[in-house]
Amino acid sequence: GAGVSQSPSNKVTEKGKDVELRCDPISGHTALYWYRQRLGQGLEFLIYFQGNSAPDKSGLPSDRFSAERTGESVSTLTIQRTQQEDSAVYLCASRIGPNQPQHFGDGTRLSIL
Amino acid sequence: AQSVTQPDIHITVSEGASLELRCNYSYGATPYLFWYVQSPGQGLQLLLKYFSGDTLVQGIKGFEAEFKRSQSSFNLRKPSVHWSDAAEYFCAVGRSQGAQKLVFGQGTRLTINP
Image (cartoon, rainbow over all chains, first blue to last red; front, side, top):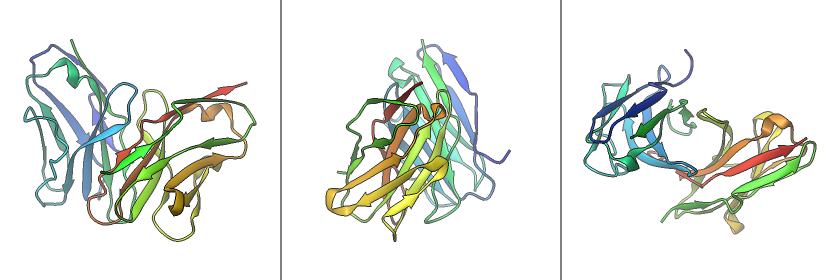
């Protein structure tokens, strides 16, 4: 498709389990972002990838959160030992280059029981 | 620290009425400013952006916004709303250089009365 694709769209898991969320950016977009949106809140920046440069992890809330991206393709966000406060919508965005806006996927709604 | 304030959590307007959603930002450098709209269960769609130049910017769906540096504001306007405009609206700010890590406001939920 032409847009940012995220999977799964919904994920329900038990506290303490690990989860992996996937993002397929728009083809040719060199920059990729992950954001978290808690219920009734705005988005919080988590991590940023730009090409083959080292990622900017300054928004990750704890060491239970990690993300990978190979080149300019798919990214995965992993949350280990999930906690109830991790329940949120996780949104991915990609951007083709400088002076261009970010384009968002529909998000993954994560619910921790 | 960078921040974005959307003072109105919820606004209700009648269909056909005019709309203004407020956004104030605090930013230490030249900002890039954005308005996004989010329908229930959906991601964010870009309405418009300000990078430089003309301070009145036009967006999709008949929306416009005006950048006022002296007031640190970037308010969103529409002359006549449609029922389909009911959604959550987010203002965001990012650096004009570098990573463009966006800082978002809390959002304004717009309800349209028929």
